[in-house]
Image (cartoon, rainbow, N blue to C red):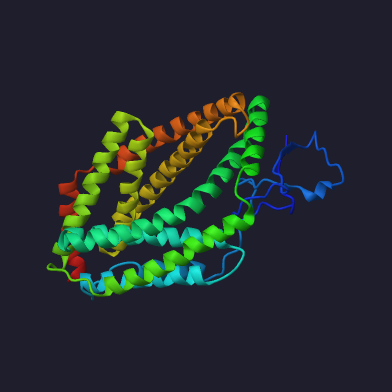
Length: 369
């Protein structure tokens, strides 16, 4: 059975904006295409990862990615303070470029700006123990305001995509009908494309102003410590807290606990990227594991947000019977993701903080010469 994703324009909606009421979204099968006044070519198959062709990369694509990655890492010949200023400025200027450019890929621009804000918060936490408390609280609040504004646009788009992707892989016809009904109602009750775009662009403009102020503030940051002493306390705290939150999530098994774990996994992931040149092999491999873990925890959170929204207003999104069936499917997916996350987390955080940081200290000394 082939499942199709339909919009009135005959595409998936690459920019991630919501479809309006006349751009009705439906799930159809190849045996039951009611195409009154339409051609079959108006419908495009939902992308299948297994069949998707890989886009040819330029021969220097890997080199460009490595250069971009190196810009966000500390260098052996610079002070930690200078590295912090350089890396934060590089990230902010990149985010401002994404905000300033106009185009159809605004969903990707929004994503890149949100990633920048997360990286900046992780970088700020890395040096938190050696900066003034007032400075940290002020700048962290600023970055959180940006993240909260941008999250509203992101959550709206992701919930729709999550519903559509799950619906495309359901073997049970009753589940298919339930998802189809909920998906149609979700689109019908979503904000109009014009309003969605206006709100997103307003959030991006506000983010640009805040980021410029943050960049100016970061340029004047002062550290009372240097070298390993400037980052060791922050890195230790992040690793220890991520490990602690894993144990809490496993014990409590709640969405709130897993979401809190995810935030600290993300902080650690970005911090280890910053210091990766100190121990490329070990930290590179650990970074890949953390990225997989963060992705799983992120998917779990997206499903939980969608489930909460549907349960709050079931009549709005297709009725209690359809919503109950959809929520049941979401629950099964969440359980699977949490089990995978627990297994991977135990492997990543098997090493205790003191031992890991002691080994990193030796590597740092050798790296700095």
